[in-house]
Image (cartoon, rainbow, N blue to C red; front, side, top):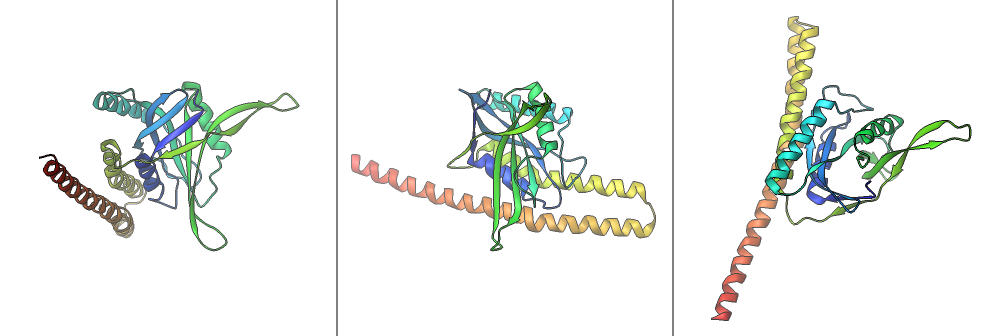
Length: 257
């Protein structure tokens, strides 16, 4: 039973970057961590490739869950700590953060396999009355309640989620972030191949190729470029920090001698 969720800041950044990668359809992924004293500690993320792009729903296949569990096992060996898939996340572009009836039903299915399994929803690309953009986050589970007529219904139950500061990006989160461009590329390639199977005339192939090239250019502009800039900024910050620490080490050694 999970009563609260602790989301590491670097894992939060990976989830949010994935959610902001597209405002046309929802994206999804798995949350990896450990559960200690009824609190889920999320420290790694597994982004999932969508086989079916939809504006209003996403679903995780059993094969993807199995792959996520395998990835968690590999992380447990690398980090020498118990790691497993503890939840899932998906985005709500242009709509509220509250889970839909489809989300609640999907969540209830996952909870049949693990009662502590939970979901995160990132609501993005929304604006308030002053045209200021904002991002909302909610954490939920499914609960069954009984109406006065004796009918059982599913509802969402909110869980407290705390974002915990991290001094740097962990290696698992850095690896997950680096996979995002490849996942988006594979999704576009699959869409291109599907379009080519439906229509093989020359004009359609030229059109489909142009759409594919436009999508790749967009990924380079809004995904790859900003990620590289952010990582380069972090690298410069850490190099300055290392230089300061070395200077402090030298000063302390001189003071001791």
